[in-house]
Image (tube, rainbow, N blue to C red; front, side, top):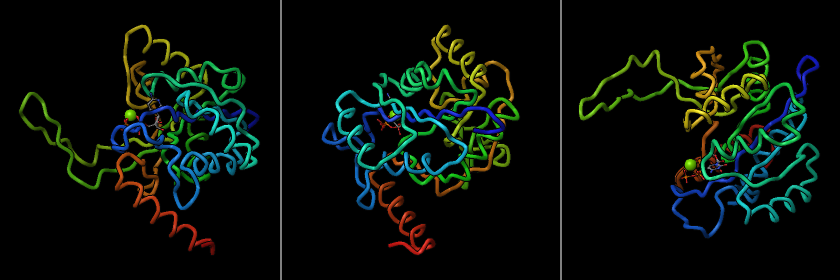
Length: 239
Ligand code: CTP
Ligand code: MG
């Protein structure tokens, strides 16, 4: 709850992990990270967050049974629905949004299942900004110079105006409903969630994210996430 408003997290976890290069052998979200599957690490962060009331997870059909068992085994109490996702990330988020659980919330926060290093602090800051402004996104400044390729020619945007969008991304529910509806009508498929609200001409608030909030996309990212988790644990006196 944030100021009496119910908060629902949607965790899209229905991707096929193509860039991880494992074929269909094992879903990316089930890969163990320091002995705990990625999806459980991510869900654990939402369990910890006092701002989040309910969680909906969207998965590939083949993973639903095993993830339900993992969630029960972990004793998580906020996960209300574990349901099938869709062909594209946006479809998976849309299906999560269509759930009963999301319909009962005033604020929706979307977070990639494959960002297990998100902190309860960042989750809460993004939710609070969305509660205030309507929509919010965690983002960091690019460290490299950004190039945009336009039919062969390069352009170099001012790095000081560039952001790299992460998740969490959060919304007042009605505003996200409007963004999803417009995107559906116009056949727009975004690679993130707030882009649907940007297209409505509405302001999206940026919340400083963290370089540690890595997205596990390629095998190298797994190694980085393990190192970062190890450092977090050392900071908290765990092994
Ligand atoms: N996702 C999803 N449904 C899809 C595609 C992606 O729920 N149809 C989820 C992924 O499971 C992941 C998040 O969206 O938690 C971010 O997606 P990404 O990192 O691109 O994962 P994949 O799509 O699985 O990987 P790839 O693009 O390499 O296939
Ligand atoms: Mg993908």
